[in-house]
Length: 401
Image 1: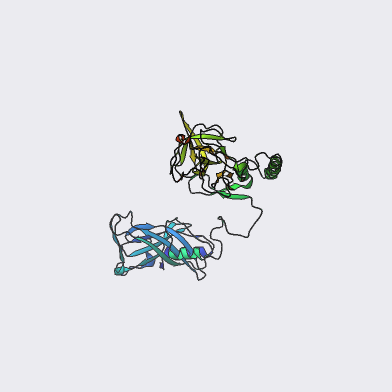
Image 2: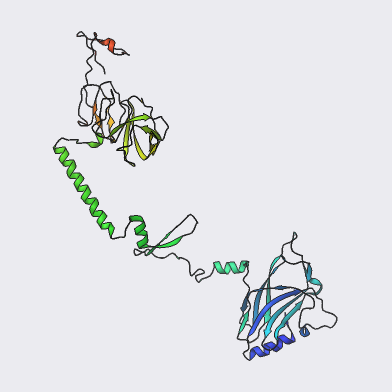
């Protein structure tokens, strides 16, 4: 760039303390005529477009580097960019042509916008500023950053994002959390007290109270269990099932008849919703098959009552005897007259069952031997359906195992 006469005059004023304010960069298609001097120009010969200044850096060598962005989006007619001018504000004359350059016949062509050629260029204009102590420019914010700008940002030894969270040492005195208020992909700070209220339904002062209540409840439950054991009353509630399955009768704990259930289903029909506790575990059994289920919710649609389950039903059940119990007991199989036969046992030792008609499985004597005798003789054998290899003894009795 060559300083114009007006530019040199402004330079003199700047040495005396005047401000050197750059206003814009302009491109033109003009050619210098024979003997025409660039220093004498006060404007571009044939101006075509103005370029906004996006950055200005003053070096220690008496020069300034200005960045200007060229976009042909709104350019109506293409032209050869043969001349470039840098404009500044003179305190007496207003805007002047401060520096000028002309490429002559080596100029590049700038095509019109709207076509196949999209031009986005960043010009680096270097000009003399001498000893001017107050050099500024009218900066226009641009949507583009050069590779050098980006790398300078990334490799900055200072904090490039002073207002953003930075990883620091571990702390035990947090005052805020980051939380999502809605499904909008934004994190927002929430005060510790507000987070405690949202999670606990109160503040941190409620935690010791809740802990004390839990301890008191645990002690009370232990005392109740000790008392029931001493009184030989339901020593193992989890193993409590008392049901003959012929006919269906409720056990001495909660139980209700199942009206519909199928393998693979995640719900079952029940005769009543009264007494069903959402979230609790239950045993589904028909005296032969059994499994534990967790009820997540209950649904009533007219006369239809259903319990929604956390997982699908595995077994197939006989609707004539299918029952739902609030118990994790299991009916234990075994040989009649031998340990383990005719008992209900807690979920810690589960096994499949072999059920015989009229046998009452009882949890009130969990893990104790129960002998079930079917009074069947040859005289009344017509009242029974007999399958398999069955033989009567000399007394006319038959033993079922």
